[in-house]
Picture 1 (cartoon, rainbow, N blue to C red):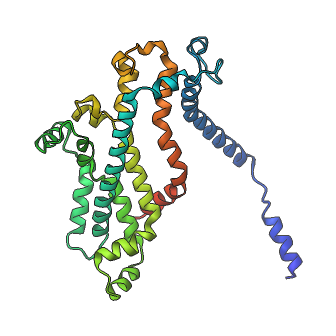
Picture 2: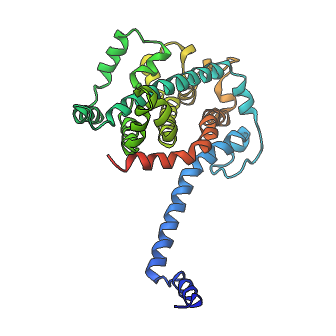
Picture 3: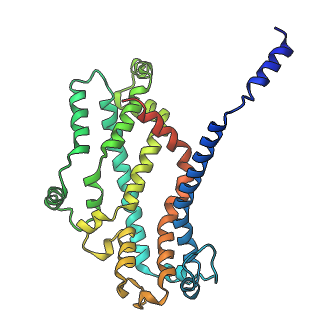
Length: 302
């Protein structure tokens, strides 16, 4: 067959005529996805618009597409509130320290359980998965935290969640899929097991590790239930508990100047919401390329 004819046939095959039903199906799928994207995006956009609107503009309409009257008083008011910065510092400490501890424990546990020659590794995995279906419960966990003298401490929001079974499974599956020859070659060169893990396995496991770290960081940043359970002092409140209390209780004590929260109303509340979202929103784009790849590579096989 002549090259020109091959090229002609290739071009013809690349423009296959699609049936009417296939095009209708694609149109419906695209419409549904666009609707879901709009439903997901609009609440965030509404918060942003309200946070940059004056109270008068906010009260004048129920649908907020664009600020009717620009105002940044809500942001100015919140940024002067010392309680906001204290809760910010607490959340940053919980997120950073908690994620580091989570990753250290999860990586070591996943690496050990990925060894198929480990005696009882199936039993250990069964016990780990069993905790996903039947947890200890709130009251036993509270008693354990109290007996460990972690009450009213930021560590009470870190140690009880030192490892997550779902994240353990992702990393364990990822390590299991790595070529065994890499580890064997490193051991022959005199590398220890710890050296194999930290010098060989971790550098080639960035997608899965970054994904799991992002999961842990978001969980710690958004956690307010643990703070409700274990934190009594307002000085140790994380950002989410401060935000929840401000949004739902409307207590004048949360204002740095002692004024009522109704002075600025909803725009100030939405400004607080945006200030809570900004850190994760800014960090996520840098990890997005690892996120999808890590989930797929670590969760396909088990």
